Picture (cartoon, rainbow, N blue to C red):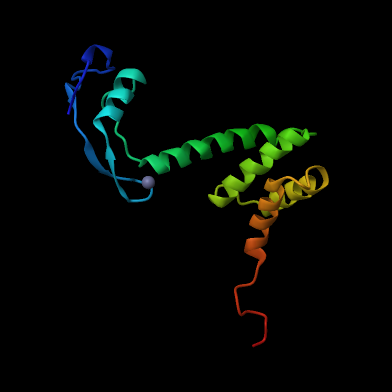
Length: 149
Ligand SMILES: [Zn+2]
């Protein structure tokens, strides 16, 4: 258990007097995790989160959600560029692969166009291969189909 410094907390009625490790179930992956007392102290006294804020995602899912959010922001701004530089195109490819893997980005038409641009401008970039791979997966026939056993 950790004692709280309530003067640093952001609260309406009741501050948190102390922090104890809490067992939680992740809202995304349903796995159990512990919201540690030290983590709570950081949330409420350093980051100034409102004291009633609840932690609902496990650390792994939190990292993934932050990465997805960043990829989404990057994708949204880069996709608007008429002539992206090779560096911008690399970032766009990476963001697209991540969003596609998560099921957020579904337009195969857009991904196909991006793949063509990537093949022209950054053919040796590893992300380009990952994009081709991602696009190829859904087209691939399931094993044993079309082989005429
Ligand atoms: Zn999780």
